[in-house]
Length: 426
Image (cartoon, rainbow, N blue to C red; front, side):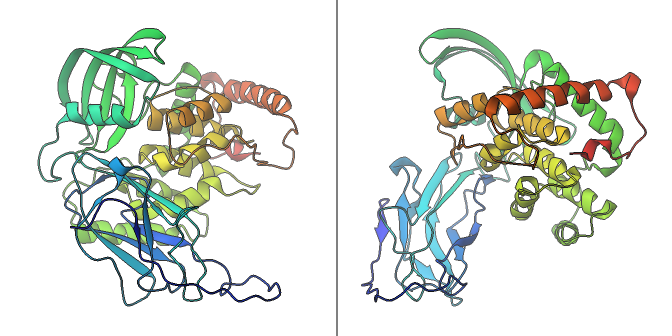
């Protein structure tokens, strides 16, 4: 069995001098284009025996840098590392443990032995994922799922005392919930008592955490711990766009049928932007399609002005799918110019983190970084639209005024006919 520390198989590299050349696909450094498991995936089958990473161009054989982000988070290696015949896919044989968070750098600032055939080091890439609790085919231990969640989240909870566990409940879509009452010490200062409902999918993947009072007798999978304005947005969106949404559980579908539907929806994302396009975004969310994560992130975080229906729908789906890798980008959407976009960014963040800072993007970012969230949030303000205020204070004031008008417009007594387009205005 190979060691758990950094693996570096180095090759001698001679870089000849010369004048600057125009950047092209041939001269650009290689980048990671695909990983298995998908970066940020939760509920990965612990029986998985290989981690695979595919680069954008052919790579040097025998040269790689699978390096540690943390010794305790690096997978146990069980055999020789290799490249497949395409010279682009590197395979790491591993033995994974159930209910564990894994992280490894593919190149880093210090180690740069993933190189293309011309000796150019690949751009560093942090691959993270977590494995399901127990075997995928067997029952999961919800209490252990909650403990694992605390191990990687809620870093402000510096100590915790269990007060009461509730019974396990199965929700309409097959997810499992358990109520947990505990006393917590926050940053070793304040003491609070929380009574929350934690929800996981049948493989142990985190879905959401909700205040027990807000969740009711059985936890809501879609609207945890939302404030009154956020709930109003959820209700209005449901009235306006219910026909686009997809809440099917796909019980009884064969693997072949699910794959066919996924492929059809992924193809629909290429356009045109009609009903099939918007419906596909939501169906991919219902399928929990990890293959859809890259295009959905692209839709949600594309830095262009224009119609935003696809953007906020994609943000909504990323929250439903539990895509915590999108948290830093979702925080930047909290100050987006389109009201639906920034409200659904808030709602998705509540689902993904169990926290609620409303429209305060700075508080979201500080909490995420303080808890050790990865990727880290960058406080640099993105310019989302041409009329965006130049200063943070100006931006905040303009959004407060826009939100006031938006919330007034969606009040039930002012409800407009479906599909008027008002929700997509800049």
